[in-house]
Image (cartoon, rainbow, N blue to C red):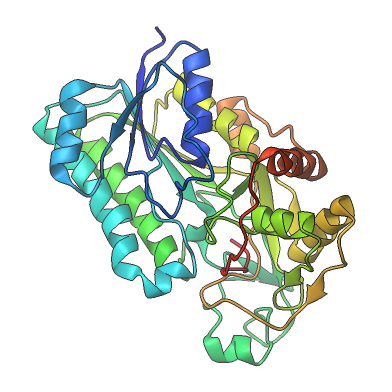
Length: 365
């Protein structure tokens, strides 16, 4: 065996794909997951390798964490368990704080009670921690304030420079771009990073934090309305329904295919950190929401997208990243172009027995 890995939230979209990759490589894998109905419904079966042990448990519940560590003492832990809805976090702040922050501290306390220090902790963090990120106006680099509700209502989509001049967003880069969360979900993800860093330093163990961009692909929930804009658009376009694009359509995101994310996580596990590492994981290619919608509609021969002046509070205007550090540190690089990934996602959706409808959170992730 190459070692043992516990994946919290491991029955979800990313976790189940990672479990298959680890088992194939010879790792002993256990999964802890609460199987929340927002993610796990009757529409999709749990897809885990037969050799992976599934512990149904809640990371916010100390006895559940203790029970898992009594039965499985992993050499590494990949912490994926989290609430992920950006807009939802503004109205369900306690739930996000409980799962993302308290769930992390419960896991750490359980490790302390079990007197078990893994060789490495791996956190799937989020590009959301950067907030609006760094922008440039002329020669000046600045960090815009979060866009207010009044600003969005007025259709003032882009931040402006300190002197009122036009500005452009810069790619986020860990170690260079300051994290400045603009919503509660993002704040809880940054808190996770700080909590794990403190615990790892005190226990002389390795920590790897991967800030993931917008992940999409086969296996993503078709019923969770907070999952992601790519799956939502793909479902609607296959049903020949028009796609609504928020703001002016020029929101920017970095869409990264599930297999590329799994390979980054696998490389992190297979090449444990010597020093604490913080890396950005994405495709490295920025795409506007209108471009995304147009591409999906074209592939499905669906109606052209419609730009609507709707918005989501807490959303950021542009999210793209510099992946050079991850490529060098992990000897990894993304291999899935957006069109190839969209075709694979659309094919997978077509293979599902039922196409649920009724998603409500239509904004970008």
